[in-house]
Length: 453
Ligand code: GLU
Image (tube, rainbow, N blue to C red; front, side):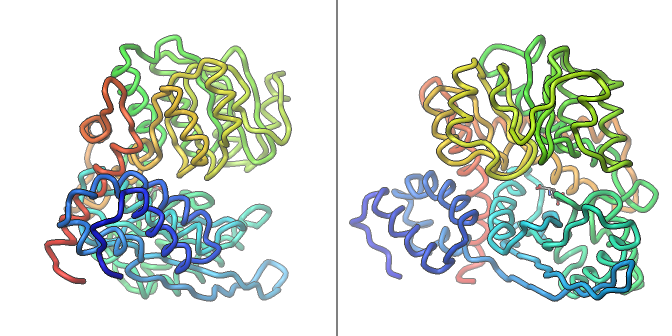
């Protein structure tokens, strides 16, 4: 591939994407995540030959390393079960690979490549020394007993442990991997290596975890939203918020929104959404936490408990709101959903999940002047707190909740500043462009410093 100076940015983007699609056939989530980045980075580096000539973007889109492995375990009836495990080590130019593990039946290599690529930019934006990685399995924990989950996690870690380490690659949780799974994974790693190190983050508080880690992604997404509204000259006070999801990110985003004076009227899971026009309260939120984390039940039970509407099989984007936080999963908000939100008066969107908005939906928000925070900026609070957990583990100390909260608030504020710096277009901020360029520069400069690697 030679460098062709005569191409326009659009031609360069087309050439670049054609090559990427040819090299990674059928990996649509990965194509989407890369396209969103390339569409802003290619014009940015058009007049910067020091990035263009050494093909930095091409190198960033080719993961450093991918491992896949068989995970074999026994269920409670003694049947032998087989799953596939993965770790995508995307880029370690600025620090050890860092990123979660996702256990979900829909997980494919494409999912994890897109997540690892996004993670590289997100981690760079935090300002902390972390590279990008992601891993997981097509294991479905729904309907499995605790013992089955434990046996799966132990079998998974037996393979993964060859590839990770506190200075090499530090996994954490993601969809389907919460406190319970991290406990089993960390225990197995400790058993295999006879070492107690910060090789995973999101750990329990009694074995090296950090305060505020559980809350950090949701809180961070709300802090970012708060900063976007401030930029628009308003606050969260009295605003109506629509949230999708009911996991860690969604519930702690709801909690922080409530604390800042907003009214949260929806939550959802894969079966549908609940609409509570009076808004969540602390008591209702505690009910959800117990329902989802202890009983592992369905969100429809909330509707029965509090006598509110449950809308089956749909996402909550048809509900009128001022601000929206997609906190469930990728591509859960399409063009029509975005149009409905704009029509109903939504002024800001903060992505708690990774890439929840389809590219056509993002275009609708940008054209309508909605303040739109892409996930790599908005949900970086989780991995930022993981970075602080790594620091505490290395120093063998624990920081106080108030200090960690302050650090989280500062980091989200700085990410917002970075997005404003690189994303300003007249009196509007293009946060997609700002986050992509802001995340790119640090990684690209480190890669350049290393020469041809
Ligand atoms: N899975 C989370 C994310 O998407 C957290 C990763 C981590 O803490 O390493 O950023």
